[in-house]
Image (cartoon, rainbow, N blue to C red; front, side, top):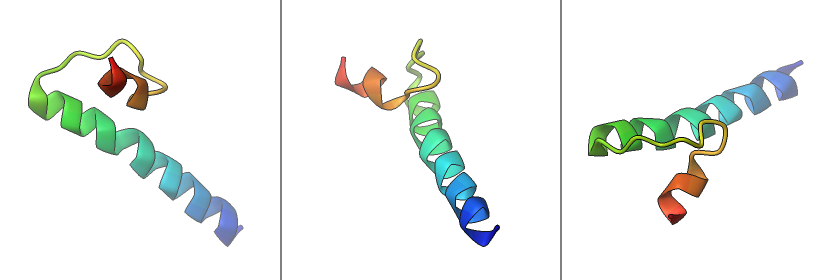
Length: 41
């Protein structure tokens, strides 16, 4: 179960980090599930 918890934590960090950066920059991104694709545009 520890592996699942660590994996979930990493997914949460990977999901939250780009969203926070986009909010700080004032960019509104449509790709909610894949924030990385917004920076590529």
